[in-house]
Length: 461
Image (cartoon, rainbow, N blue to C red; front, side):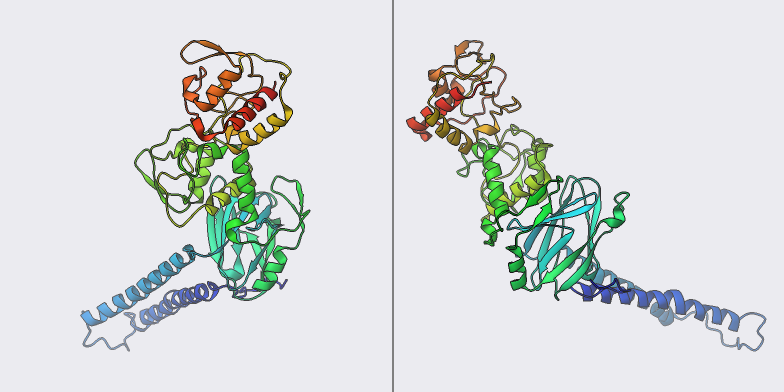
């Protein structure tokens, strides 16, 4: 890597424009702050009262044209610089519609980068030239600032939200990467490099396996090389889809819009009306807020029943979930689609364990294994959490226990009760829980219901 020069290379489409504005500002500063004071000083000496050689005849006391000139020229120069800078700022802050999106996590004292196909790197950023790149950034701890001098771009990276910036590299090479915000005792060591490659070299690099340190401090070895695939089905989105399923989100956020949470199909980038009447854009920050603090922005027409995933998901996992939701965008909004308000909430049975059954009762292991897959695919795990923190009761030790219902009656959670709770959940709601579980009616076959019942029987405390 070349030594840092007085003026870095111009290696992006912004660099020349930023430098031109900079030199104009420097020139105007020299004129108004350097040349004009000497002219004023000269005139003060030349026409001082004691200088009898000065001709004071025919003094001009007023000259409208002169006064308009020396007022108008500076005004035009200042306004010209203002509008030039404003248009350049808007250009730098407005990415094109088609960009390569790369996720960046800042932490003391490291930059962690993940590309759409799942490729990761630490303190390095590989990008293709002649292609717009958008960085979606967040911090795991304190405020950092992502700064690439050769590209003339810098953006603060904040904890608890996303910031972004974009650029287009114009020439291959290696360039300095700095944290430009004091972030702690080892701030000066939070440096790295940006490697700009031709498109062909970048694609080859993407499929090269490597080993990195993940943001949680663990070592992530690339056991199998990432696969270069279209952005709509990249591994980040695929991992996010699996996470979405495992958390049980699919039970509420059904793609057909029939869930107790809004559909996510076509959500990203759409305008969504909230329950308080406000309208928000479903960008990365809205999605993040909806995952970590769903009660903050509730989509109109939906209840505030989604559990918060704050402190349960890593920054990596949040990025993957958002990548999956973005992959569902179809260029238009579907009615009531938002990642807020209700989510991860669905159940397989409205039963709560009020007493431990000890070891699980006899059950068909093969059917139970199939039932566990149905349970996961329906998203039931999101509500019926094993730690009892879901909006639906936990199922461990439920079978054959006595359950008190919302109407005060007591029932035995036998097979008939479980089947009824799956087919018609509102009929018998356990005391202390809201009637939010969807009705599965004829959506499940008799075989699937039987599999679910066997699975519930198999889970003991």
